Image (cartoon, rainbow, N blue to C red; front, side, top):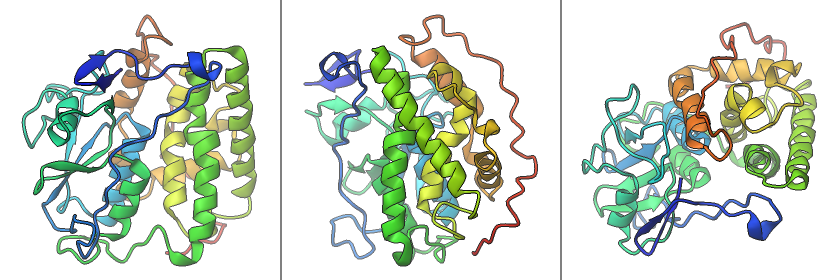
Length: 327
């Protein structure tokens, strides 16, 4: 792990000494947007944009899911990094099953993409990255904003298979935004706040907030099919990328062990239903997920031993059919 500082690689990308042992996630820096009409400077076009992702990373997983749901595979190409984040960050190694070369430039390291876009870049080198082939720069490296672009900006572009699908419908936006904020702070980032805490107090604070939120969501799902009601939305997929990693990684590695998702009456079936949605299982690579966390985070797991379990039956019936769902 690390970050670039004035062109030099640093082996530490977060510091809890100044935050009372609490993990604080830095802001992403590339925040431009692709728009349908090109008014942003980046027009939605087939073949123009490229995604750099990791199958291990929940933030990159969001972008892959939206690409699959909208049917953008023939419109936006992808390069996948090796599952390990070593002392120079993400690397490309096509000899690893599931990983690919850098399809655009043949670079060995993801940080070379960042410095190609901005030679004096200083900051973390993260996935996902939405790259513009035309101007040869990074459009955006904030997963939430990339999801929104993929959801709607390309709907008029030839080759999109599901332009009719909208995961951020106008009528539900206020509720989706509220859910996203709650889920991000307590759950998506909450597992990291627990796992990367360096004081007992900071860990317990994050732990309690995490399970309070999971309990709240489980109760919510007792009476409705999805987070915002009867319709699948962006909020469900943002939660999914944490839930799918929870029992395999976060319970043990990040010490989030009060309950597994499998122990929740409603979250467990909800997770299986989302996993069973067409196109989703193909975005889930547990070999990359488990190896990344247990091998890359040597400050947490010095031996680098990867646990063999748990056994997860995500294809079991989800039992959510009695609750109303709409297309």
